[in-house]
Length: 249
Length: 352
Image (tube, rainbow over all chains, first blue to last red; front, side, top):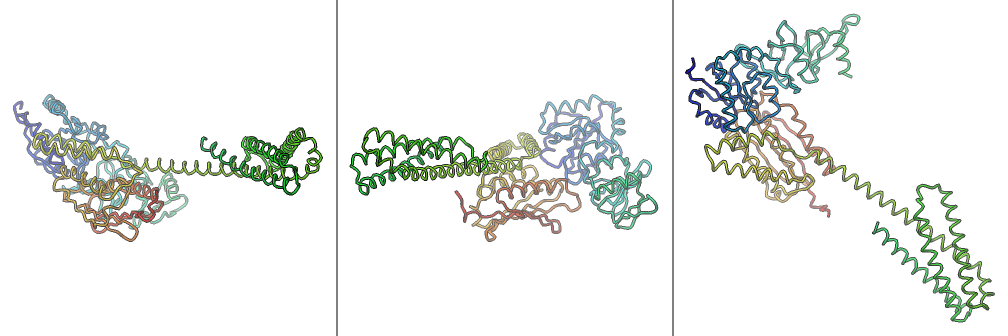
């Protein structure tokens, strides 16, 4: 176990950035770069296939960001973020990244990061990582503009404007779009806080997209429902109705 | 302040000259019409005129001291009346005293013209006071107008500053990371990129957001920027320029195109692994310089937030600079995003 070579994957959309990491890694004889990926999609595939000990991960990448990619992984590898985006540092530590390298980084700083991984050789940490890495890590103030889901091993990126409504289902949230519905393990509260202002929690079990609402109908005394353009009817709670009235005014 | 004082002195000199002429007329009347001895006529007209000029000079101070806008019309009229009567009487008695003490036998004639002198003198003083008031009023007005227009200019400049193009730190750090990488694999290219980056940064740091530069110059900055980005993104970024010759010397605000090109990269290259073609074309469209910037983008991936902010910023900048709205428009067709800018051509009204 001790002398076994560790495997690493580099995920970054810029070739020069990948080259630099490869170059810095040359001195570590017990680390082998098994793959390089140019975006989150390739990253997921490669991680599932190679099950690496270590992943160098850029955050800003085409199609799927580094965070979104991690969200979709079932087993989380050791991650060293490499990014020029300072504002993500906090978020990175929330997902229990092993380390966070700000580009451009020095060889010394890089070596420190690698040594951290080599030191905790037992790997006991990675399990706790995995637990923490559930999707509620996205604590930043930023509003979501897309949601990434997995369906039948296919990764689907849903722009939030395509979401009609969300429905709570035990530990999951069902995201209903015009192209179908997708289950995601997360809490309603998270989406209530992170979706743009056009999404309103109208009920304990529902968050609706204002742009998809056709009408608000009175069912019986003080009991309203929302009718969507596509025909679905959703119950509205009293507080939900109040919020709706405020938004529409 | 200095300017005002000198203006005032010029006014007084012109006034004195005018009074001098009136004094000369007085002499002519006395000498030719009234057949007064030449020395007496001369002494009379000179003393009368000099004292009058002295009074006219001193009139300025109470008028200038009193801020007319702080008083009612009645108040001002009363003031004018009192000033006129007192100064007129003062002048009359002063000259009467001097002349009669010099030429005692002239007293009889002088007394007979007192009413006549008083009427003309009062009239003249009223005219001078009115002119002075008009001058003060006009001065205050222009001062107000100047300070107001200065204020407007300051506000506009402050707004422009807040809308100023700001370099994306992500761009700087990623470029530096590329340089860091190139120092190992290709030191020569690293050097070239370091120089390009420095040159670009220097342009931005020196950049004046109020200034206008030629299209040719603006395009040079953009090419510099794209050269740097090309090193980072390699084949993922392609750029083509299509400029009609006559446009090169036309003026546009400094760094107005830069954020648009950056948008192309942000929404195009950042979000796609395919090649993104950025196309920039310029042509003359009547009195406008029409600039089209387009890029293809990955349709399936939602754009990042804030797409509109950059464009809004440019729109506000153009509005402030040219005092016209709707100079910017966008077009989305298939998977090509185009921004169209209309820059008014100013060569016709080339002010200043």
